[in-house]
Length: 302
Image (cartoon, rainbow, N blue to C red; front, top):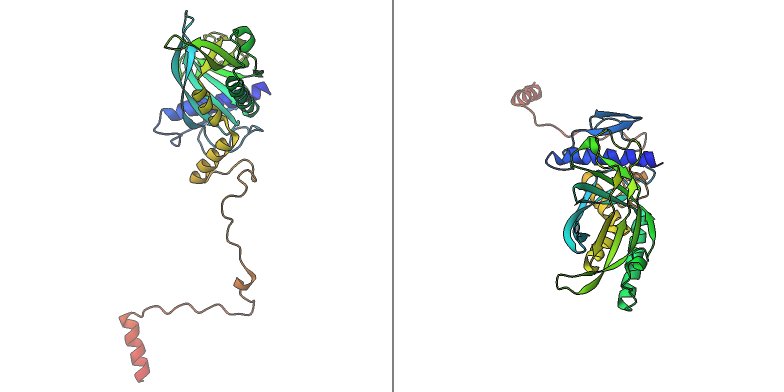
C-alpha cells in the first residue's frame, strides 16, 4: 500500500514540476505513468494513471495559497519566519506543504484523517490557551495533542526528478514556548516531524540526498494555525474542487461526489414526441432565384 501511494505521489510531483516549466497547470504536455520499476512518458491523452481509492477527482494539484510559519534556526535556540506554499491533490485527497528547510526542499503531506486530527488538536490548543492551562515544559507539551503517521518527500532541488526521496515519519502535535521578537515567551502551536529512514527504491539515483528525513519543528501563531486549519477543512477543499471542476468540465471520480450539482440534461416529455402517423412538418420555402421565378411565371401564362 505504501509503495502504491509513493507511486502516486511521484506521479503528481513529476507532473506538477513538468507543468511549472510551462505557463500554467493547464499547459501540460505529458504525464508520467509508473509501471513496475520503469518510468515511461506518454501524452496527456493516453491511459489514465492507476487510481487511488481516495481519489476525489482526476484533477491536477491545485495551489491553495501561501502561509507564513516559523522554523528553528540552524545552530540556534531562536526561530525564524518563512513561507510555505499549500496545495491540494484531489487524486490522493491530500494537502501538502512545500518549503525549504536547511539545504533540502520538502513536501509534507496531510491526508484526510491527519487533517482532521490537526484541526481537532488546534481546537484543544485554543481551549487550553484561553483557560491559561498551557504548560511551559517542552518535553510534556510537544506531543500533548497526539501523534500521527505522516508522509514526506524531499530533494536537493525542486526539479531534481531522480533525487526525490520519500519517508513516513511520525508527527507530534502540541505547542512550545518560544521567545518573540520582543523577547517575551509565547506559546506557539507546533508540529514536530521526526526523523525517518527513506523508503527503499523511492529514489532513482544512487547519489540521492540524505536517506533520512530531517527532524523538523514547525511553529504557528494562532492566526497562522487558523489559516492552515481553514485550508485543511474538508468542506473548503470539496468546494475548491467542485468550483475547479465546474470551470473545466472535469468528471469527478465519484458520480455522487458533487451531489449532482450541475443541471441535468433536458428530458424529453411525452407531449414532445410526434405520433407515428403524424407526417413531419414541411420545410420552410426557400427564396426562389430569378431563373426559377421566371420559369414559374412562364408556366402560369401557358
